[in-house]
Length: 628
Image (cartoon, rainbow, N blue to C red; front, side, top):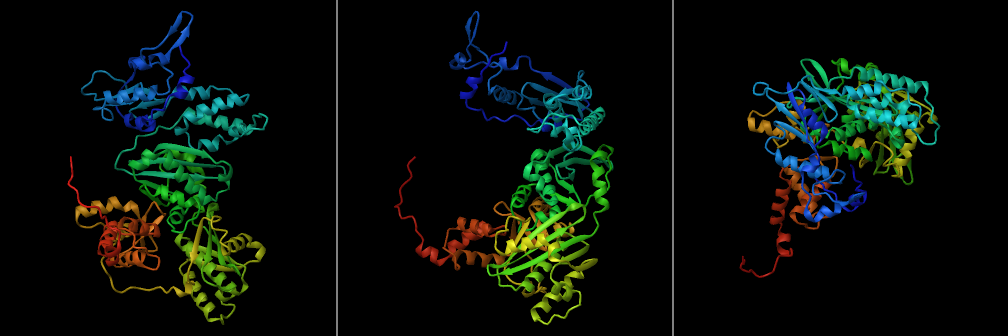
């Protein structure tokens, strides 16, 4: 008998007690030689109802009105109440000898001390064996034995079953795209040959699904990303004995505006989605992302715009590093890597740079578009806070584009500009009579020498429309959110001399910089552990150390002398208001600066400030004896 408690559930407050993460439980019990699976008999009915609440469970039958004295099935908070009880009962052994999810329990047994147990069993929809985590054969057979869907309802049933097994299917959203198209509203149901091909492919993959492993603590996890126009996918693997073993497959179909994202944004989005879906793994392991897309170089730039800023901050809490994608050593990843192999063959190809500058009465700016192999596209807009001529804006755009290409580690670059004067001067066809333009030309030639090959071509304006639009929008400050990266340039590039400091001063940043750049740790074991633990919070950009922050993507790390100047300027400078120590520390962090003793130094400076001590509002109440 079942009772409908819909109305009662509507007025009951939600019990916020959390249920365990299913993926974590499955990982914790996989790989053991013997397991015992238990399912509590009428588990909810073992908990007594509070006497005052018994009448609220009343129901009417032909024999009269009755109420429950024990907790019935169907109540909104029954699951949370039962989980709380199980956590209390098994408090001493949960996570070590047993795992519990509501009324499903599995015990991890030591074969030397137990005379019972099984070598495989079902737990929360998965098959747990000594080899690892396997797909439930019954769920696989349910899809394999299905006929081709004849209507929308059958397609929904099919996709529901596929989603339950999506952890085992490589790029499932990509494979199922034709099937998902039949579910769109406003269309008559048509089962096309493409749908049938996708359906058969899903059956073939589920006929022999991969075996997933439980990752070992202390060893990093590697992630591969796959991006196309409509789908983003990722796979998490761990290397064991020179072989890559899969841990988890995820996939997502892009919706609406997401399909119009640039490829570099889709790659960053795939990493963010993976960090959300697989948060327990990201929190417990070091993640090495193997990709040929310049995601790291873009995310670490201080002048990101729009959603990229949010993603950069979200990812900063995890220990994520990036590597070039090398060879794949796993047969189970063959389907996932097929597309990526084609991309790798072009990874070291030519990069193309389109630049344009704009100067008008409202201001000046520049637009930069960097296109790489495999459809990688990075856009940057620059607004100049100084008055610049049109030729100067064109040069600034070229130098900014070349700098961006160097940061992304492009080797061969072909630049395109619609300015005949700029291309002619840089290529040596024209003489630079203007002294300022001559300095720009020398700076451009100096940067060009840093590439393996560099070409600058002149193109008609109608072939440079996108860069021209970015430049015009940047000059009017309306294009701030229209590009991946936006930057304000305060002074002309040629007025920023490259200074080499001959005096070396030891600072708190030196050990961290040495570790990030060369992997060298201090000799002191305690300091070495501290540096290794703190390293994920820092990054190097153009040989400068930055700390990943929450109020902004990156905070610039400064030495004690610079810190003293920053504190003085913010506290009592032109815009200083002699604020308190804690408020001063927060204001400096919002301004984008960091050093380890920031808060303590600010508190000490305020205590030493003569003006603050003379005129601050002090507490004037008389002293009173404390009464208990």
